[in-house]
Amino acid sequence: MGGGAAPTKETKTVVVLGVAYGGAKAAQELAAGLPEGWKVIAIDRNSHANHVYVMPRYAVLPGHEYKAFIPYTNVYHEGEQQKPTHIVLKTQVVSLRPNHVTISKPHPEVGITSTEIPFDYAIYALGAHLPAPLDLWGRDPRVSVKALDQKPWAYNGFKTDGTLWLRERQKVIEAAPTVLVVGGGALGIQFATDIKAVYPEKKVTLLHSRTQLLPKFDQAMHDEIRKTMELQSIDLILGERLDMSSVDEQTRSGKAVNSQGQRIVRTEKGREIAADLLLLCTGQIPNTAILAAMDPATINPANKQAYVQRTMQLTTAPVEAQLASAVEASLSLEESRPKAVPHTYPNIFVVGDAADAFGAIAAGHTAYYQADLAAKNIIKLVQGGDEPLDEYKPSPPAIKVSLGLTKSVYQIGPNIGVKTDGVDDLHAAHVWPLFGIKVDKDEDMIP
Image 1 (tube, helix red, strand yellow):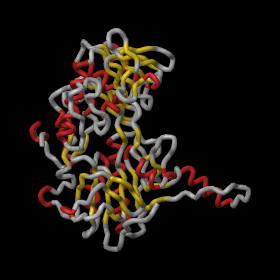
Image 2 (spheres, one colour; image 1 turned 180 degrees about the vertical axis):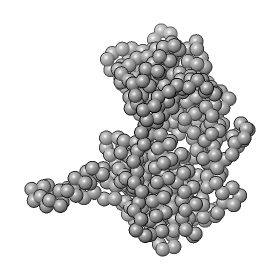
Image 3 (cartoon, helix red, strand yellow; image 1 turned 120 degrees about the horizontal axis):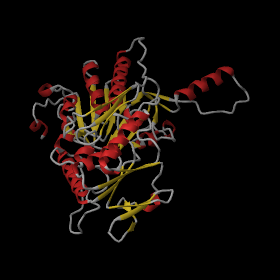
Image 4 (tube, helix red, strand yellow; image 1 turned 60 degrees about the horizontal axis):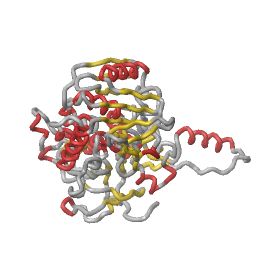
């Protein structure tokens, strides 16, 4: 668990792993609030933030791909006055230990001459692996239409790679007369309704294992989405789970083929569904393998997220279990069997989709507020004093889901509503200023 480089009194370094919605906010708060002489190193395998909320739309509708990838050129909002102690590295995180992170290669151009970076504090904001239809680092996006003479696909985490990836997915969707979307969460709903809006002649089916779409939200959300899908003539199959044994792991399509050349999959109830294209919009997996390698006890085996304290500090047991352990210890029960004592890593904070944060939903705004709290707690720890650390309490679930090109449905706490003022690019420019880039016109998003 230990070993390798360790911090010293001169280290004064905070690393932020992942620079998307949460990581960017953390880096900004740390850069603004840490005392003089402290270094902030933000690390991401991409050259840019993936604005995932617009990506389902851009994988269907051509012309806006470049707006989904926001360069990390001004993450700290310092412009040309960016301090040399505020660094963004495009590199892979190889491993994490309690006091150092290992990256794939040194970066001497910014004074990092080793692959091991010692730190005093770390914020882990590596999110989750996206489902296959949006997994840019996963399979070849051309896989279902790839000609034998095409070159192997390579993805290296640059904006040009991302825009090309979305264009290839557009071609795949355009070429498919029939589409089966699996998963009734936000991603599946957006894909199904966007495909039908852009290509009304296509036969689109959505398969969902539960009887309610968006099951974490109010029944009225389901009712509105279902009504919209019926108006769009989308076939909706609820309460049936896809039998994954009928899916080819390599191509992510059905193993069987009918006389029309369509791939056939089946549900666990035995229903057969034929389609030219299968979009598996399920199975978002928290990106916590690096934490698990450091200490397997920090991971909740039920959901693969990392246990955290209310302060967002990494720990080896949920808060409730720690309270129970403390009660048992105070009672000195001789008959109690020995149990592992929960351990907290006071210098490592986990935020966003990777954190098992007391029922908080996986969303960009969740990561943003958790990261803000974690960064402020680190600043308090650095400054010393007796002020208690802030504690996180999830806000009521909130979501907005597009239902075709102009309509959307939203829920904020108990309030549910419908809007019909949508635009093709989903107002992507509104998010760019979070990463320090002002947008006055579409061309400002091309770099």
